[in-house]
Length: 354
Length: 225
Image 1 (cartoon, rainbow over the protein chains, first blue to last red):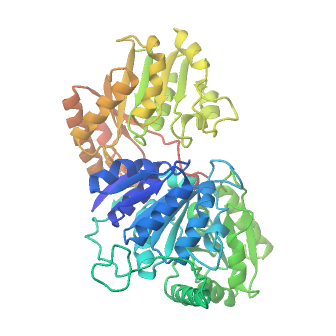
Image 2 (image 1 turned 180 degrees about the vertical axis):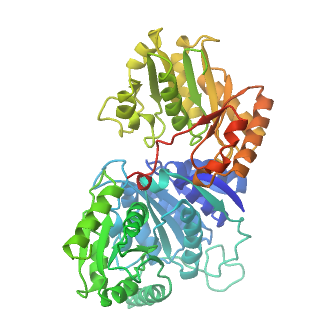
Image 3 (image 1 turned 120 degrees about the vertical axis):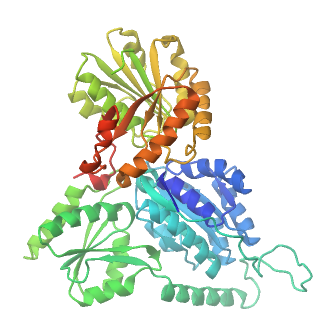
């Protein structure tokens, strides 16, 4: 177990390598450039492939090809680049190809800016491209989780034959924290479905998302939906900190969860009953725990760097059983510990719980 | 504190150049009238010393970077004011250079202002960062930095740390690597940093060394109230 100081982006890259990723295809964009830069240096050391494609569209289709041949492949980009990849992602989801897509998000819409943002939540969790599909979306909250969750993202991608996404942001990608790196994974097992040649089999393996004949498309979609139901039943991950005896529960992920945590520790020192519910998977979403907490008369505050995206899922999960407030920052600014502290304090005062 | 008029902090990406440079100018300002800090980082738009322009300005330190309002623009643009600092012989100038050889390359255009013996260029090292965990790798990086900057390194800054997980044990272990690299490169260790993350009981580390207390400025948003 070696402990090193890594920027979030570097932690993602090394975490992917340790998880057996040997194919990286990408295209430069701030604030994720440390991922391809690290990969360019590191891949040759592990006999892997780093390729800077001519565009984001090429890169995601290279991932489609490598993933279809059974390799652990990934791409990484930031918001506008992820938008460009959406067609490929939809194809990959339809063809059930495992792979990992990293979004170190920045402010949008359009070209936007370079500051951190959480306004790609809808795109990540509700499809993004065309058709009825889902990515399994992980939202790391620490440098260590960058390493751990990208490893898990590769495992789950393979287990469900489904693309997975790491939704990070400019601050998570740039800040430096000590991380413990896992051992390098041993050789990965061969996949029976991969397109690596018939090798004596009678039927060729086919990777495709086309469903144009008869009831092919309906059957393909039924199969996908059954898979998504299994994922929703088994893969929800979250962290609940002090939610049991809390009057007010703050829901936040990634960068904002760190800010919220600092504010909550100040409030708890004052004896306030406040807790944190941090979704680690954004899809599948931790709706059951939120529903259970709502039934216990807890009220909620959602803090995010968007005009209100995560909050919609919280409202759906709470389903009118309790009150949900929202505190958002639009692209360009990160909520400060003081702002979150004051927001919670004023909410508690309004409720007469201060 | 060194006497050369120009001090350049260079080193690998994420080695702590900005924190060291900012602390260094603040200490310099206590002894000197005219002190300037040049933010030469055009590699990465995050955590750069220009973010501290107003704080350092109140201390009377002249910070030169991109024009105000363009701090977050991803532009490889340098201010012409860098020349006015270099031409002012009364001005003590500190350069905070972008990471890696690609960042050091920017120094090349100021070469005419840096005749040998007139400047110090110090290599900031944290051996807990990827790619510089052993003396051989560090020597290679040092040579690449010299080649890219067209300047000679004159000293090493030992900034071995694991952030909040820094303790006496890993701090000293890191210093061993830095010391051994310094011997290989035949360069003196000019600064050893320590931060408040070292428990007060352990700051005796500082008694042993010609130590340099590092007040951290480039904090993530959740560590600032």
